[in-house]
Amino acid sequence: MRVVVWNENRHEKTNQVVSDIYPKGIHGAIADFLKEDIEDVKTATLDEPEHGLTDEVLNQTDVLIWWGHKAHDEVKDEIVEKVHKRVLEGMGLVVLHSGHFSKIFKKLMGTTCDLKWREADEKERLWVIDPSHPITAGLGEYIELEKEEMYGEHFDIPAPDQLIFLSWFEGGEVFRSGATYHRGNGKVFYFRPGHETYPTYYNKEIQKVIKNGVKWVSPTDRPRPTYGNVEALEEISGK
Image 1 (cartoon, rainbow, N blue to C red):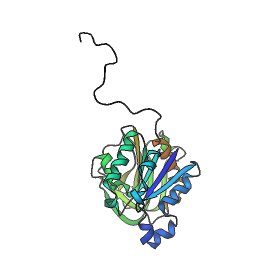
Image 2 (image 1 turned 60 degrees about the vertical axis):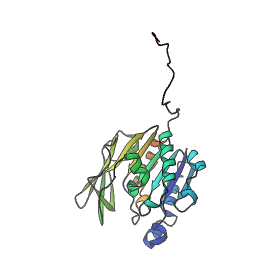
Image 3 (image 1 turned 90 degrees about the vertical axis):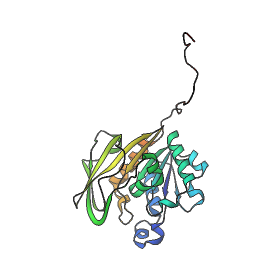
Image 4 (image 1 turned 60 degrees about the horizontal axis):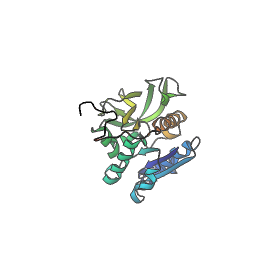
């Protein structure tokens, strides 16, 4: 499996708190734990040529992980189109935390993907809604995070194909924090935790979910269906 972890990598350059928590960048931290199970893991960032997502890179990528926050509008539309095309062809996509507002996620969802939010060092409890789903393998009934940013409903996304996690926050809100979708030949997994000023991606249970998510969205080995005008498979009587 070939995985690329994409991160805009802006907070790490401007916020000392973030750079102290993630000295290799959020992308580096995620890549490090994925390498425990996957041999071929690379990273790409916003300020690289073509945002690090050249045709060669995308064509060789089985799963793309996406983290963005403050620079969504700087992602070039032509790169979004290429990523979208690859998802429809079968490349898996894992969208993390504030990636809900990324151009690629909004394009795939067809909605605003807006929500409520608050930064108040709140406890978050992520309840496992679908204990039979492969993404929840190895987990208990819930994951508890001591401090996280609150995301609250209504989350303006289409009804998920599968709802995996539901979060409760100390301030009272709930949120659909783990959702899966099928788009063309590709699979998409959105997973909420991961605010940049908290060490969330060092949490072993969060790492387990992301590892499971990468496996789940990985491409199915089959050709893409044929579309458009086609010849009949059988002889048509009366023709």
